Length: 345
Ligand code: COI
Image 1 (cartoon, protein in one colour):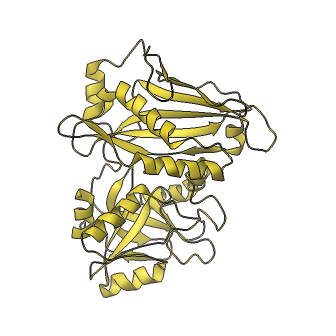
Image 2 (tube, rainbow, N blue to C red; image 1 turned 60 degrees about the vertical axis):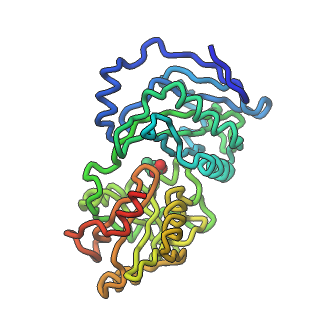
Image 3 (cartoon, rainbow, N blue to C red; image 1 turned 120 degrees about the vertical axis):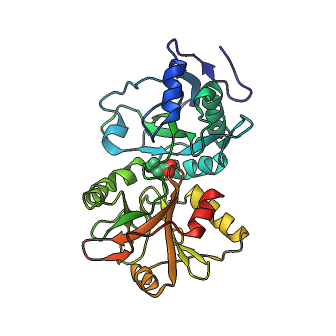
C-alpha cells in the first residue's frame, strides 16, 4: 500500500500485470485507443462528502446500475492528454493544467462537480508513476491519458446527479491515422451541425461526440476519415472537426483559425500552435473563416495549406474539403512546409 503527499490515494496493484513480452509488442505498434495499461484511477463524489475514496486499482470493467443517470442523459465529460518519454527516460505530460482547467469548465456546463486542478494533476501522476512501463519510448508514441467524469447515481428523473465518479485510464498511442502525415480529405457536413450558440460545443462532453458520429459515418462513406462542421446559423463558417481544430495557412505565412466561441472546443494543441507560430514570426488571426474564403483562396493561391490539430492526432495536413456539392483543394497534395514545421516543433 502506498499513500501520496496531498490527497491520499489507496493503491491496489494488479495480481496479473501484462507480461513484458505482451506489453512490449503492444508498445511497438499501439495504434490508437485499443489497449490499456494495467491500472486505473477512481475517485468518488457525492453531495455530502465531496471528492473521496481516491484510489489506484487494477484496470477492470465498471459496474453500473442500469438506471445510472449517465446512461440515459449523458451527464459525462472527459479529457485527453499525453505522457511522453524523453530521451533521458523521464516522463512528461503536456500542459496538464490546461486540461484540468478545461475539465472544470466542461463539468460546470454539464452540471457536474468541480474537480480541483491539484487533484486532477495528482490523479495523472498516480497512474503514470504506477504504469510508467506503459509509456512508449518510440518516436511519435505516448501514453494517452483519458480522465473522465460521469453521473453514476441511479435515478431516472432529469436533474444533475448527486453521485458522480471520476476515472483516469491510460492507453498507449501511436499515430492517430495509419496513413501518417499524408494529407487527408475532409468531409464538410453541410446539413448537420455539431453545436449551436449557448449550447455545449465548448465543453468536452460525451454528447458532442455522439452528435458527430452520423456525420462522421457519412464522411467515411465518402472516403474521408474526418468531418468538418460549419456554424449552425448560416452553415457558412468553419467551426471544427468534432475532435480537432482547423487552421488555414495563407501565402504570406499568416495562419488563420476560427475564433473560439461557445460552439468550438478550445484545443490545447490549437493554443500551442498559435503560440509556436507567433514565436516563429507567423501572424495568427483568430476570426470567422467562410467556406467561400477557403474556396477562393485555394483557387487563387492565397491559401497554401490547411491542417487540423488535436491531442490525439497532433497536427495533420488536409488535402481537400469536400461535400456532396463541392470539392476544394487537391487530392494529390503533399504536406505543406509550415504544417510540417509546426508538427515537428
Ligand atoms: C483528443 O485529441 O484528445 C480528442 O479528444 C479527440 C478524440 C480522440 C476524442
